[in-house]
Image (cartoon, rainbow, N blue to C red):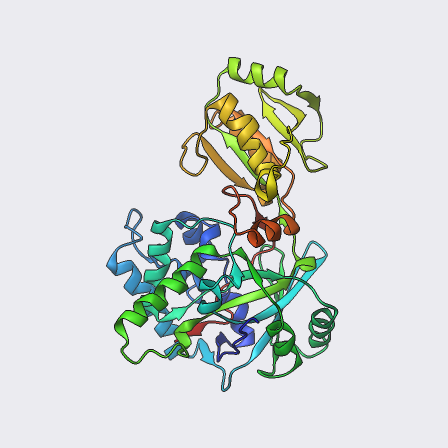
Length: 402
């Protein structure tokens, strides 16, 4: 059984929500964050990316930067820019992008569920990123941003999420990127909580480092709080849970920075690359490669009894292409490969190759949500950068302070 924890969110007044809300910390660089926050003193980027308020070149992991983020959050709350709900509540959060809607439950979930694998992972976390987010959480005494989880759908959950959308929303605005964000406040107790509490498992979609950092925070609290009970607010972190039929995964494309003509010629011949005009693969197992100003298509080999990870296109691409032809042994650490989120499209691959910043671009077919769940259920891990979820949640709308 999953723990669903209503919470007393800190939030902007509805009219100010568009100015406060921002993209998640991990989808933009410091320079991009600085540009997005220009002229927007109320933007939540000043909390989650506080280095933007320091001179360029400032170490984003310095004590001063972490302290500035914490101070900015306190200022937002003390000034009334963010106000706290009078009582715990749940929320229904809908995103609409390019005519497609996805709706889920905004709540707090349990670190214990995460530690006990009721909230399942599919990706390795990096210690340096864990350190960074854990420090932010500790300094701010808040989980400032929600993670994105997914779950199996049920008729009851579908019905309840639909019914919630007939009420007047708390927030309803369209962000500069064209995504409409609508949130409805819901009672803390009732059928909605019961329906999600009855699930057997949740799956991390976006936010592995925030999940792990929430767990590390509890480890710290257990060691430093003699009266720790496990019921304190810091034992729970905010998440939006979307049924799997609501989710969309875009491709996570790749580029190789250095590749000689001989290696590509051997790859082209042995995997029977064919010239194409459409650079977007139309089915699983098909990959398109951009080299020398032209697009080619090829089919990935299949290994018998490969298991839930081995059947993934990202794993097959590494096994049958990147390592044997381009010498990439570990895509997590090899500087010769970079990953390009599908939101940037194949034009970004062409731009990188044509400019000489990359040698070959690879346009891949998206991983399915069922593949993600199959890997997680098996207790295994996906190759790095296997999924790119879109649209993204906005940060700063419902903040969990403890």
